[in-house]
Length: 379
Image (cartoon, rainbow, N blue to C red; front, top):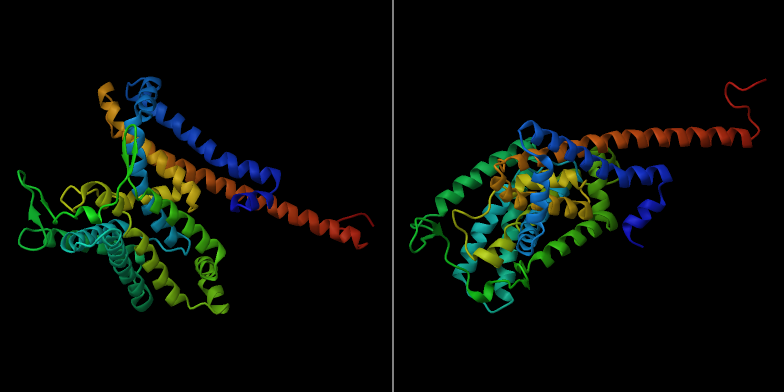
C-alpha cells in the first residue's frame, strides 16, 4: 500500500481536507499577494502571469525546468535529511560545490570505460560532500558548536578553497578564447547521456534524483535507522532512553545529508558542462532550504516544490520583455514559502484541537459505558 494512502486512511474527513487543501489555499493566497504587488508596481498582473505560463510551458522551457528542478530536488532532499533530526544544514551549498570541483578534477584526470568513469565521479562527490558535512556534526557533538554556525563558516571556507584550487597554477586551466578557468574536461566515457526531447536534452541523472527520493522515503519511514533518526529529532532524551547513541546519530545524519548534497552538482557536471568552472551553478543549496520547507520534508512534496521553483525561475526571463523586473520572481518565491509555512502551522494547531476533542469525547463515552457519571452530570 502506498504510504500516502495509509496516511489518509488513518485520518478523519476533516483532517484529510486540511492536509490536501492547506497547500492549495497557501498557493492561492501567495498568488493573490503577488498579483497585488504587481498591480502596486504598475504592472497588469494578469498579462504578467499569462506571459509566464505561455513561456514556461514551451517545449524548450519544459526541458530547462526539469534540468533545473533535478538539482533543486537533490539539494532539498539533503536539507530534509537534517530537518528530520532537527538539524539545520545550511552548508549544502558549500558541500556540493566542493564535491563537484574535486570530483571534476578526478574525472578529468582518470579515464575509465563506462560506466566505471561515471561511478567514480559520483562516488567521489558523495564522499567529499559527506566528509565536509561531517565536520559540522563532529563540532556539534565534541564542542557544542551549533550546526547553523559551523555550516555557514564551512560554506565560506569552501568558497575560499575552491578559489585557491581553481587556478591555472594548481588544478585548473584557462579556457581557450576566454578568461574563464576550469578543470580539465571529463572524457566522454565519464559523461552521462541524457534523454532527447523535442525541446532539448534532459539530464540523464534525473533518474538518480528519483532514486534518491525513493531511498529517502524508504530509509526514513521503513528502517530502524530512520526510526532512530526521527525519534532523535523529536527528543534526544527519549532517544537516549531507548538506547540510541544520539552523538553518533548527529554525526551520521550530517554526513548522510552531505552525501546527498554531493550529488547536487552531478547532473550539471556529467550532463552538460563536463568540467567545473567559474560559472558553475551556485546557490542551489540555499534554494533547497526553501524547497524542503515548502515540501514539508516529504519526497513527493519536495518534487512538486522543486518543479514550482524551477518554473518560476525559467519563466522569469519573459518578464523583462514586459518591462517587469525579473526579481519579482524572488518575491513570489519568498511569498509562497512564507504563506505555506503560516498555513501549515495554522493547520497543525487546528489538527491538535481536533485530536483533543476526539480524545475528550472518547473518554466521556468510556465513562458512560462503564456506568460512571460524567463529570458535572446530574445526580
